[in-house]
View (cartoon, chains in turn yellow, green):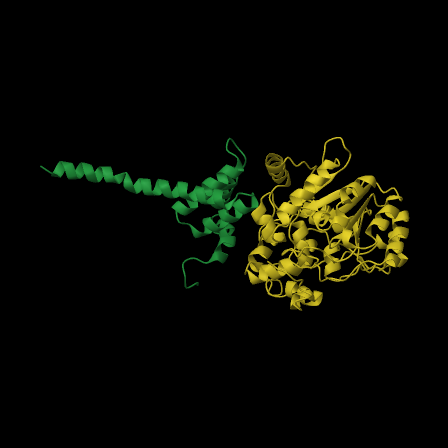
Length: 351
Length: 111
């Protein structure tokens, strides 16, 4: 189990340039596998262009109380990158004028940002239809100052999306750390108690499943059925929907793939599962990602690879949705993760 | 030419068998795909049967493929091992049931 971020370990893969080099070399440089750009060209999807913006995703910081072994953010307690009030003000200005119907707060653990509650209160005033907070669950029970988060979320009609890689203790703890499963169950019960995940409460609680290893997720509906059955039978926990998300070969998951000698097989699997109909709905086409320091990216993964949007508007301080809609989306081999099989996005399958 | 008979990388080339006999290859893969669809048995149950048979026929490619398939389907390692034992039990039973033949022959030859 990882205990420190790649960044704190000074691992070579904490450098996005090195990651991108790695993803372009080997199998792809030798022509054994087609690059993502080649694939897009073959299915007449190059260059990838945005559709109408639907989701504005803000990363409030890379600090997290967990150090999950698959984390694409390389988040952890040792990460100090946190969105400031000044950047939040810029974000609020953008939220007021955006055409997006969904606001999506993520991290790290977004709740660890000292101005998180103020920001949620302010942002909720904009009346965005779907206001998501991505919570890792354990933060709710990490310290008593967080115990009232379920009530706080309820007050602001926040849609909670939480990671739970599996409905069994062993796999969850292996990926997310010792004791994480029990704490997650406790937090889910607290969310259920205030009405989250209950039918007709209007309080949405969705779970995110991602494979705990070098394999792709199976059918989302089948997995949701298994999760609902197991969580109800074992713990009487309810939730709304399950999002199945593919692990993308970047950051700590890339480190794992290389160390376990699964990288080549995994890339073959992603490339072979390329699905042009997933490309039609891939999330970078309807989402913008804002980093803790206000830069704009096509998605959260491009943010971690420091691939800023290819537009004259690159920062939230001069946000211009119309100008951004004309950009070309930046891609590399990691993008195969979002186009494999049923596709993958922060909202689950797309095809 | 590889120096060993089994190379894990050959599994992903399985589809290439169609190149040397298109009709038979395609018929096989159509059939194969159909067999593992949801039917009277669930795809999950069939995956466990495939895993057990993979061990009995001692096919390393199949073992790799259906271990991964099981992981994807959320099949636990305990369930996988039980399936392997089911295969192993049939295989050892198939050996042992020949003991009856041995006993028959022994008796026939003995005064």
